[in-house]
Image (tube, rainbow, N blue to C red; front, side, top):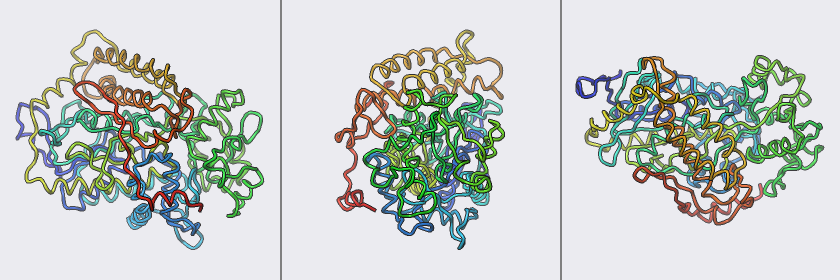
Length: 609
């Protein structure tokens, strides 16, 4: 039961107050798994949703969760998964996180199954696994193309039955501190606009990414970088912010659905990419790193599709950064589809019955939104902003941030994926590190003898800042500033970047920050999207500036970051993280070394498997 303690605060605050041992901000897969683990440790836990419980971005993860169960191909192991993850991340990953992830992912999938998750099955009853980009063997446990939905259903059911308190339609705007450690969080109810205060010994951030900083994105409205910004303004480090993943296949037409994700499962089940000339163009874009295990002829790729395990994977299953950049090149050189994309064809590769059975969501999505029957004709696709590799710097074992009492998991945590995330690793990541974050937060909270003190002066100042848009009679609406921000990020900080455009972006973000000081809102606070956007604007500007400065700092091309003025991948840059840190009121940039990997793990990366 929620413990309301507003009477302890009195008129100095004037809003509701709740007290918990652990507060989890974000109710997607990582947040739910963290909340479950903290509750299993016997602590009181509150789970805060910006939207409604069950309406999380995890639901939109369609292809599957990567785990080396070796049910479909017994050559798979955690060692191969670890190697694939490091190679996909261009060796910039926090190796400890990648190691724990590869080793623990199978247990987390089996645990999910024990809690009631219904995965697709092999003929002998084991969990079925599919191929995905960058994975050497079929590794993704899945439920058709609705895997994320099943994971959320299972975790949500578990959380509710454990009696976890849920606070829906609540946006957190500030983390509170007692000295150097976390003491709580301040937010507001979206339905009434009234402030709400949460006192906590520990807080887990699981707010997802920041796709809404871009105009074309697979992300929904909640993804405004709240966790990144909250952590930054509380004094925590952010790392790898320059690495923004553009998923190769988003819908491009009609405009009303542009950016909506087309699962990598289409290519995992045999879909191929063609340009306007009908060429299967990915054979031209195989990096040297992957030539030993990627088909270089259509004949061999077709043998792979037919089930020949001796054949190498088709080039459509290269990592997302490679495929996205290949599509962009085809379009720029005049070989794109009518709506500036390329064609993704599954109809000529699989029967209509197979497509409807394995990809029911995609069949329905294109039928209803684009009027296309994917069992008969190809889809038009193009890259869409999809995932943030960068995030809060955390300890691999405990998921602790650099601020005591603060933890992070899922997409808002950095380090796990390095310069580029492999498809399917996000769902297993949120299970592995969601659990570790919940456990780390619980152990930290247990060590505190009393609840940290909330500074009511800090609370009142934060409340005043939230109300400021209503106090301005003149100014701009947040809609216009956000629209201009998205256009700027799309133009200057997209898939391909260069110094002069990043320098322009630095100037423009400062101009946008000045305009944001005069953002105004009208009407009441209740159900007021104009005011809600005005508050989201702070987060969007923070993460956008971090992306720009980090991208400008890294003078090389690696993974999801392509600098046309620095086209090579440099060895020295592969040894450092770009760190974003707040000093006073300024955002600073630093380069700090990665942890040295033990020799036995380095040897794994050299093995030919």
